[in-house]
Image (tube, rainbow, N blue to C red):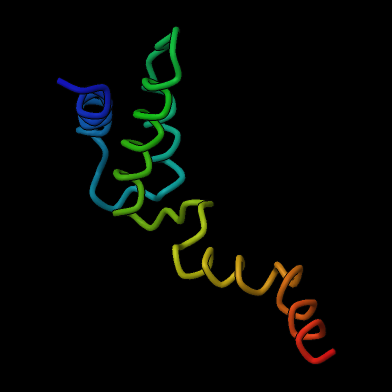
Length: 92
């Protein structure tokens, strides 16, 4: 069993008694309260956050990470370092 699978199993066990219409806030609190203390390396913590996100997204949770399209747009629009400068150099 991987760290992520173990985290998903812990989450499933913690939320098994929640009603289907439980608000997102209660789901987050229940999942966060079930978080095990996995010391050592960072992989267990990353796996927990990924399993947490996978579970909560189904109930309306919006992760703070940017979508791929937004990230690509930000890279092309926010870096005018070369766009205008190269155009001016070519134009002379």
